Length: 272
Image (cartoon, rainbow, N blue to C red; front, side, top):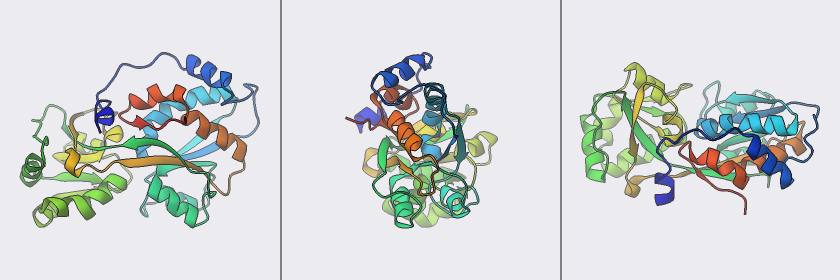
């Protein structure tokens, strides 16, 4: 976990993406830079959102295609979750979400079998409202004390939250005491809830906490109880631009994209 955890601090912004686009064009990742007809529609979950938002403009410049984006949770039945969007037949060429949820969409016929590409590894962390005391979560025992002492805890309705409510609290042996004061957050970032003061402690993918103003990131879960999620991309079976979708996935999975991904608190899984 050291390479992943060492990347979880905020870093300075990268140079303009022109160098990235040129590098990808040189290795054939984007093909011709001439304008191409047809928008690409992407659905992405929160864990990869910060990296995706940084990288998308470079792809648009290099490919000549506009990329339209819908955001939502990897799982669950919230109106804006990716499974719900696909069930309504919203347009999609590329979907990016937690690998187990992506594989479930393959089984449901929503994503092309064999199109899955692993992009990043993502850890879970905690945050408090900006300026609030930072509790100790550096060991399993310290984490237990912090959760028991917290007056309220917010957690996501996606991969990290599912782990929290179905496994983590049981592992720690504090489910009965802590779950009643925990709130599952739908269609909003956990960090935003914490920044408003609506929860004293927030748990989510580190990459979803770091961009939020008004909070202080505490750190990741201890290694003994950490749950690393792989976020992956796949091509929707209803895609009207499958070749462009493949180009975009290659771009996101390229070594040239890795620095932008790493600065958001994710571990890139670049193509070899």
